[in-house]
Length: 94
Image 1: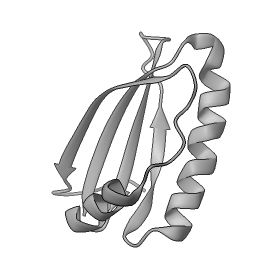
Image 2 (image 1 turned 60 degrees about the horizontal axis):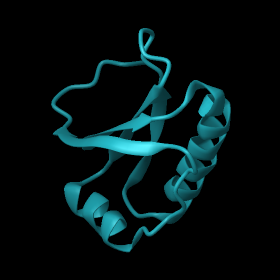
Image 3 (image 1 turned 120 degrees about the horizontal axis):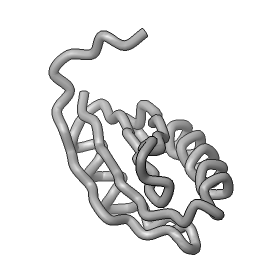
């Protein structure tokens, strides 16, 4: 398994709309894309203008196939500022 961290700059006034956009997009991707395992959206407690998405994919190849064909909708007013791909070594979440 791998995880992908996305950091978005999102004005606080658009945070709720961004969260709804992320939620709908995650449900669609999880239903339609091979290897998509879902995601979690987080907001830093000390930074109201950023949101962090943590997506889970079965393999890096699944992720790269998604990226190669994605072309999805962006969110007006949000800016992707960082993406990081990480190997899942251990997961003890419930």
